[in-house]
Image: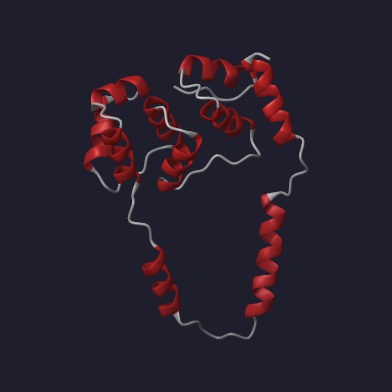
Length: 168
């Protein structure tokens, strides 16, 4: 079975499942929240602040990215050239702890680093992104990491064949 057939089988496995819409789930959650909170005049925000303090992950996108680069003994220039991102953008990522990259930039960097499926999920999560299993684009990206396909041209061909936005 060639890679294109394998990709089609992978996509069909996820895209044929019945889906619950986000809007429907949100409406259900919102209505039950408001029903439970009726009559409560105020809330003690110290509980929220304590929760945030205890659960906030200090491993930022920047920290994780440069740990992966160091672990693989790569030079910054090797990574940003392979990822096809501008040196100035990469410099901004390195120097600004508060910089929030686009999902595509994170994916391109993960491809350049040849990360595993688990590692790319970890890196995406550190930038507040994910690869959900309900969109063709995200499934193709996930499939490529799962199958160790890191060639941006080949990935773009898969994306193009499925009418998805290609990686720049």
